[in-house]
Length: 203
Image 1 (cartoon, rainbow, N blue to C red):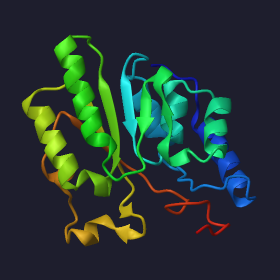
Image 2: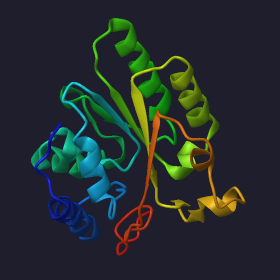
Image 3: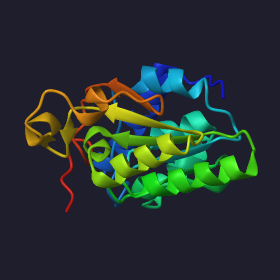
Image 4: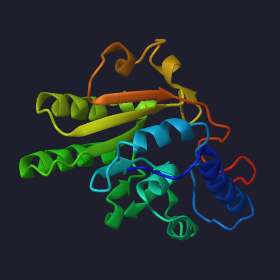
């Protein structure tokens, strides 16, 4: 679905959320994006309004690019739902559980295939989630059954504060070593920590 969001527009929205969080205006955890704007804008040029989008806890950009208004999104974030956003009318859902969205996305893709709707499913995951068993099994199932789904791996090189490649003692990860037409990968670096905005500490 074509979008009129620019890189700067997305960054401005996330800066607004970061400022609100640091001022105490958001009481629940937030996970902010930075550095991945351009790849996401390009990807969403191929996402139709009828398509499904499944994300993890860092999904502000995906929501905006799927058509959620800034006002509606900010309202949900202020209400404490930043890490579990869901907008059924826009067919976008996120999960705060690591890998929680992945099998749901696969099941949705299977349903779309059986119903012959022509709709596609887009499942966004991080690099560490992509290495988990639930993701690898789901990708294999989608490949074997040729489901209408694309897994987008947003590789920022870390899982919370842990270097993903050091964890697996390898400079390459499974999605680098085994290419799949169902998997799209891009790398980026963020200025934000895993959670929060780098000023206010929240427990």
